[in-house]
Image (tube, rainbow, N blue to C red; front, side):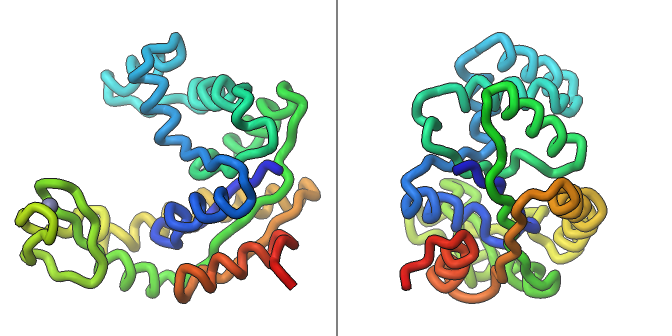
Length: 214
Ligand SMILES: [Zn+2]
């Protein structure tokens, strides 16, 4: 089963992907992690990606898809994968379809976690991180002390309400049309309410996938 996981920044993808992976017994794969791993390993495509980044340029979709393809060809993904962050634009969705096709595979379901924009602003602005050891916290004010190392908690610039609204606008203009693209292509698109406790959302996801326990 190949699942493309979608969702606004702060919708809980990063929390739900590993949980879903465990339940379905298929690995989850975050594009950012694969890209970093390829650069560290110094593969040909990893070096190419590094070259773009060294110049301060975006890594082109073709390079990212190539790196994903090499990863997905590994036996670990024979039963499926949950792709997190693989598709943000329509051209990337088209690229992914072509790439998977070359492996004789296709996306089985597109899973979108939906959540109210203002709820996301609230969620992300309640998030802090230790500036020393990077441990994330929820509901603790900037300036508090880290329980682990005594460092100071800060709010990431990315998580400031203004920045969050900008990221949500980018999502709406770039990413939302991708769901329409998948629907028009006749693919299965499941939209799941991402608000509420983690285990509740997890149950909704399994129900949407037809994997919920009766
Ligand atoms: Zn710390």
